[in-house]
Amino acid sequence: MVKSAIILAGGKGERLRPYTNDRPKPMVEVGGRPILAYQLDQLKNAGIETVVFATSYKREALQKHLDSGKKYGIRALFSVEETPLGRGGGIKKAMQILPNDWENVLITNGDNLWKLDIEGLIKKHEESEAMATIVVVPLRSPYGIVEFNGADEILGFKEKPILPHWINAGIYVFSREIEPLLPNVGDHEIETFPKLPSDRFLVFKSTDYWRGVDTVKDLTEAEKEVIEVFSG
Image (cartoon, one colour):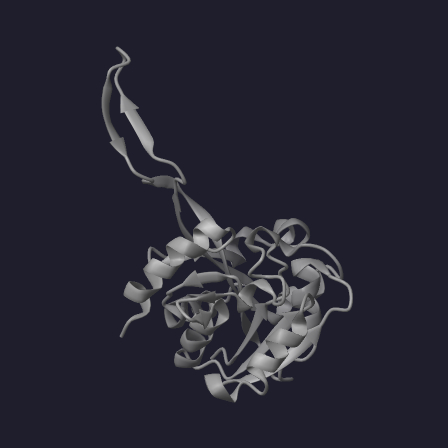
C-alpha cells in the first residue's frame, strides 16, 4: 500500500501576485486555508503517512507553516532545490528522501484544488503493476459556447460546458522503476513519459471536483466553490 507522497510546492505563482509575494503558490489561502491543506487532509485519510515537499521559491513560509507535519497528521520532509530543477528533476530529488522501502509513491502538483478517490487511484495502479498512472479530468471550456445552425441562426448558448477531452490533473502514482528515467533537471512529461511502455502507462479518470488556481479570477471562483465541495 502506498504510504508516501511527494508534493511539488515550489511554484512562484506569478499570475497570482500579490498573494504570492511572500509565499509559494500552494500556500495561497482559499476559504481561509492554504491550497495544500485540502490535499493533505485527503492524503491523510487515504493512509499517506509521509509527505516530501519539493521546495524552492519562498520555502521558508512553507516550512514554518508545516513544521513536522503533525498539525495535518502526517510526517513532513523537505527536499530543497537551491536552483529550480523543473518538475521532473524536483520529483527525482525528492525521491531520495522517501522511506527506504517505498515501492510506489503518490505525486501531486501542490497548487491545484481537488477531491479525489485516492484509494481507487492507488488500487488501480498497484493491481495493474503500472509504472505510472495519471489522473485525468474532463476539460471545461473557459468560455461560453454559441450554438448556431447552417443558416447562421443562433440556437442557444452554453456557459463553460464540458468538452469531449481529458486533461492531466497533475496527480500521479509512480512506481520505483520510473526513477532512473526521470531527468536530473527538466520536466517528466517531456523527458520521461515518452519513454514509458503504453501497457504500463495508464490513466485514472475522475469526474470529481478539480480546479487549477492560476489567476486571481480562479482564486475568486475557488473561494465560492470550496465551501460547498469541502463542507462536511
